[in-house]
Amino acid sequence: MHRFRFKNIWLLSHQEHKARHVEFHPSKNLLVGRNHTGKTTLIRSLFDTLGATPQGKLEQWDENAVSLLEFSVDEKCYFALHQDGRRALFDATFNLLISTAKFGEWSKSFCQITNFNLVFSDKKQAEVVPADPSCFFAPFYVNQDGSWQAEWNTFGGMKRFTAPFKSILEYFTGVCPPEYYTASAKKSQHAKALEDHRREYKLLERAIERFSKSLPLVGPKINADNFAAEIEQLTKEVSVLNARQEGLRSVAVREQELLKSLDHQIHLAEGALTAYDSDAKYLLKEGATPLICPTCHAEHEKPFLDLLEFAEDARVLRELAARLREDAAEVRMRTYKAFSELNSLNENYLRISQLLDSRKGQLKFKDVVESLGAESAFAAFEEERKQIQVAIDTVVLAIDTLETKMNELRSPKRTKAILTDFREHYAASRVALQLHSVPTKTMQLASRPSLSGSGGPRSILAYYAAIWRTVQGKTGTYDIPVVIDSPNQQAQDDFNLPAVLSFIAEDLPAGMQLIVGLETPTDFAFDREVTLMEKFGMLTESEWGPTLALVEPLLKKMYDATLAQSQS
Image (cartoon, rainbow, N blue to C red; front, side, top):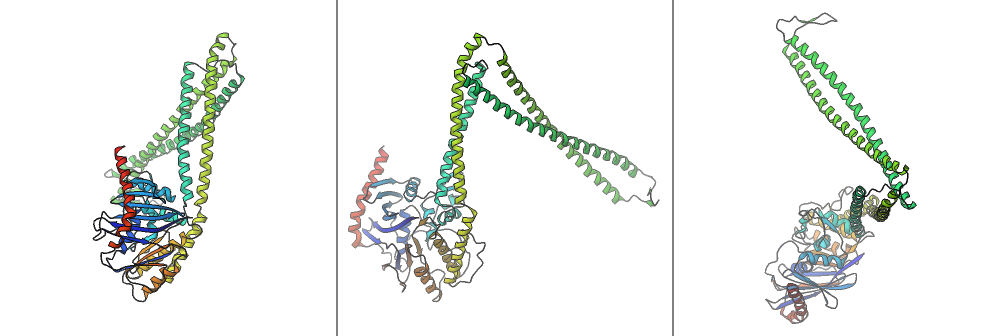
């Protein structure tokens, strides 16, 4: 399981000559501050620095402020620097790894250092594209602008992906783990190589065909191995022709039988229509005698309704006859096509027969001389054919192996076990948050609850907690910090709010890094607590000097790299 941790963040405003440094504990952290004291700004900066921009805008915040974030991936430290859309990545000793204002380049570097290999379908380009930092943090950041509702609205820009959240949750919970996408990427590479090999094989076949027209390969073969290879090729071609001929004969027989049946039905329909025309003339004839039943000799009048029904029957019969004629025409076309292909096969049989007969004649010196060049070419062609076929077989075997591995990684049994754990965690979390129990048998990973009132945020928190616990289970793939901004949503009362805070402080998985933003202090224990007091005054003059000394050299490296890129 890969482990990601926030370590330190520095925020600096050249405009205000103020800065702020916050160090995070590897376990439970609490940010306390009333509205507009900067706790949301501090939390948002964690993600914005890494290229994941949360929904919502900040009030009275310097848009050109600089943020420097120290984080670790599997105990390896990095520094991310951000200012006004430009980002730079440094290693633990401040060596510059990348400097860019292009989001795609930054996202690629972030995914590389975190080993995040999830991919999606892009809506606009209709092609497979890699996920970005927003996808990496989406299940683990609950912000107050978009996360507490029934829809996924934590980060902006994710709508460019096709149905991303189901794939994201399957990735982190292990339903479709990173190994699956690694195998899928390798399979795509092999599939491209297979396509290239098959294209090359077809080109070789066409080259042999063109060469044989200018210098036939039908003369005597001095080399016995070449002779055997040609006979093997002819045998293979005859076998293919035989199989194709049997298939076409079977199709031709079936189509002829179907055509015979259709012709018979058309004949019957036309006979019935002829009888109808005669009967209709009689029924419509003025002054015709009444209808007399041949059995009981009862007389029947000819009411108008009966005449209409009789005419409707005739109309249906005419439509049926027309459809039958159309079907028959289509079947005749298919039969003609089958016989045409059979004739084409017969021509191939004749060509092979003539090729074999040419070996029965008397060997002449001229034949031997002409065959020497053709024989060498034939040997070269055959060797190339074998090499390409070996390459094709190797790639096909590799693809089959990868498909087997992918099926094992995403087996129904594995998926069912993970969903069972998720549903049990959700049910337990609802109980801990003082919500009524609900059926969870059909609940899916992406099934966010939709509950109004004060129970809505608690049900959302229970849902997130179920995801976090599942991710921390035996099939989880990443250990990523959980960040919760202002859990006191929808005016939780003095009975429910303590239950929410207790759940966050004590019931979430142990060892997970947790960062919580609250408006007021709490008696529940956190490993590190940061208190923000001044309204719109999260940055302070006292931290300006030390922060500037750290950040300014890194800013210079970032912009020097930008200048070098523009001049190259």
